[in-house]
Image (cartoon, rainbow, N blue to C red; front, side, top):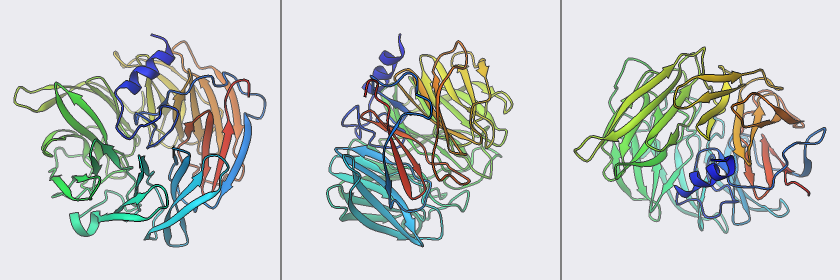
Length: 419
């Protein structure tokens, strides 16, 4: 199967938040897996990188990524202590609205979700807001801390991006009694909460920095999330805790969002934890059980916070704690097929589109890399202006444009071929 067909196949199993394959309406794209269905893109960048269309300022400070749908670009950021959700025109960068959603000393970390005429945005203190996409008006608000005993494994702040699944929105307060909650997306009313007790010696109680993903195994819909004690599976119908995997958890921070491939889950973490491929199957009693297929040691592959993608039976991601060595792994075997030092330094946030990996390094270097198991092939680089330390916001790609945030500024590049 070629790469374009693979990307389209992944998008068939699409999250309801995805309304247009060319848009990027939620964390890690239409199917929440770091893959764009956009085609007709540059296969090699000119010297200095693709054309800069515009730079939009006034996002506010923070590490949040941005989402793009129905002509709107939405993110969250901070002005001083005030946390704002802000919306800009995709066409010309004009600010359309700005709504304060909190006041915090923590960084703005969470990427919002656009679902039709609504936006779901989480502030770093765990206040989840449902906003009107047209004007930013608050429809409802729930507090993970005050209402659900929210707890973080790391005090930096709530970082997950809300998952909209059908008529519900999934959140992870992280506390022992309400580890995960399912809310009605229209009213905000709680449908269930799931208590997860410790299931291994590693890690600690609390919400991590990962975001939940959804899949169906043997007719059972489940949510997979990486919390303080490890990767968990929770039944969507009633919030029943089904399984937990503790081997790649640490007390400091569990960050990368797992990737699902059919009935398998590939998960990774930094701090020398390594990676794991988990196989899920029905348990014969209406639930889903988990088995470890393999575990890769930290020196083989560990992903700190840049994420990874699955393309044509291979996992591509940046290897190393606070590092992003481009790496290709054969999914079935766990064999590392190649690993190289890329053009940038620090962790590398990643997405895939039209046969290529887009890797955004912590030092502001962005690389275009051919997604092939045959070897590392660098086909372009650019350097973001005004980059300081911790350039961590994940890239987004929508309608032929690459979106790269650097704190208060959003740089937009035209990556279409022949434009």
